[in-house]
Image 1 (tube, rainbow, N blue to C red):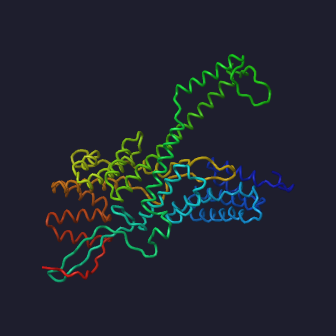
Image 2 (tube, helix red, strand yellow):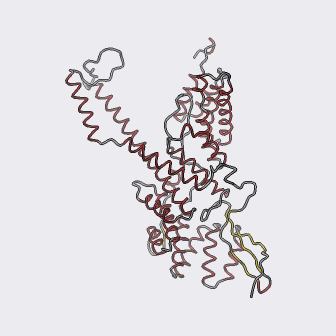
Image 3 (cartoon, rainbow, N blue to C red):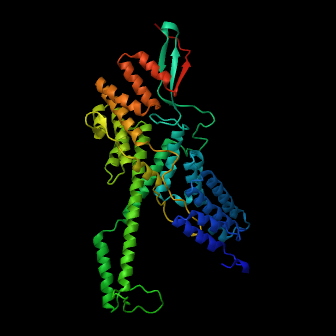
Length: 489
């Protein structure tokens, strides 16, 4: 790469930078990308900014990464403006790949609407990949979390308790409404405005697409072991009948007897063992990735069906999630919680309590459903979204778990279990046990609106109205609003 002779080394530098990126040497990768070279071609500029955005993504420079992806997308789309349009321009267009990277980054920055539009642009390239549809569905889930969408039973970071004050004097009453997401006229999502890209129905369809693609992929890759062995035996017998041994040669000479190394072992055998080890490792990686996709599909479908008030379907998905082998402890916890909520909606509180009681230890004490290591593993582990780009100089983001939504800490998850168990006990008339469980849950989730409401409900059941009012006043998520409805005696 002698630059003094005027040689264009852009491609070499991009390839070397991608290699360092794959090794995790991000500083060296940036240094190679920043080396002065010929970046006048739009295709090279697009690859440069895309790769730089991927590196910044790994370094958690999210907003700068989005800027790089936007620049890369601009240069990639400029290839279409050439008149007449050349075939080489079409082959160099990586706008779909860059749009996907940009969508992943918007998800991590908590911008579900922008992410959904980016994923729509990436659909022509990724529509056959299960993880793409899982990511597309996450746009809706993030919109719910941000309060941009409203759904029954869905919690958001903007949850509040609305209390209407009715009447005056001794006739004054407080009417507690269900937990609502704070209305925001500027950020409200409408189906027409965003083309149904962010809606519960579309998210459910995305997850169904992912499930169908995953099932089809597993069927294609499912090869009986006996058939594989028969093929291998047939190949060996064919070589024996021709008087040749199975070898791996790097030259153009006819295949002959395998060369022996200093230890007397055959190189062909060693290379075959290495190849077999690599294939086994690859199969194991694919198996783990498919398991994570299945967990996300089943868990998200259970949640969405609960929001759509389909408890039977939610219960079915939750139980399917529980039956997955090697399911992570976090998803096992979610499966029990979703199943319990579905059973409560079906008026089966006893069965719901059984779903949650798997975490009960020593009476009414609850063990942690998972530990801190499980949370960190869920955020740090990275999955591959599929095949690499046709052009090796273009780097694609790894699909690590989006960090817009921090998972519940183990203590918070334990608090959720206390609240849910307390409510199931209250429905069954076990007020003393319910009061104890809800009190424990509120201690772990003091600022959670739903935990506060559960505690207020228990106070009202026991006739402690003043204690209930005091808890409402102390909660920062409560909004007292005057009501025009007249109180009747």
